[in-house]
Image (cartoon, rainbow, N blue to C red; front, side, top):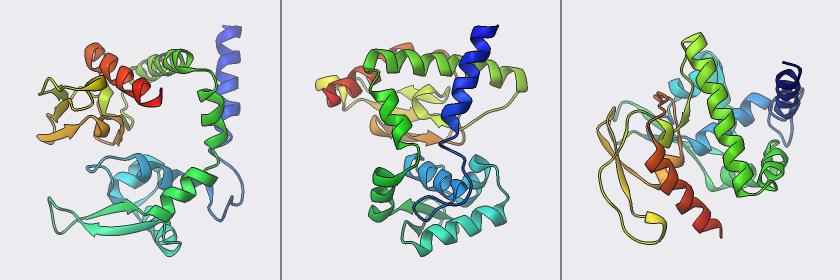
Length: 211
């Protein structure tokens, strides 16, 4: 138990990069959280309601955050292709540049990357197991990457280096999903443990692109 508690305390210390008083580079912590989420969310999750759920805010608070990010030219609203009455939030090139250069968690990301690919995979998988236990204990669902979701199904064999052209299907939205999209966050996510083959070739493709 002391070892487990020490590990949790270290996670809490690392999480301090997420939450802070005042602002950094002109944005408060929740505004950074929103911009970061929208920069990684898939096309089904870049909506005001999904954003509110992810950051744990009311619709009114999320709307104000969106307005702040729009005023700084970090976000734009566009009509949804599926439902013209709805809007989809898109991070602009300026917003992506801000995330790349100034996101407060970048130094944590760099520190984890310095561990090397194998250690990163082990750390990710260990944290995923922790979340599996938390989700089961509290009967909750959190946003996470598409590749770990029970609704993801492989529909095409794919060819080429790292199977970069492999195609998938979202069984919830009944929509095709590209390999790149499987790396994005989804608020309709439901965790599964039955994704070993897809997980393996996604990891191989990612490492091949980095190496």
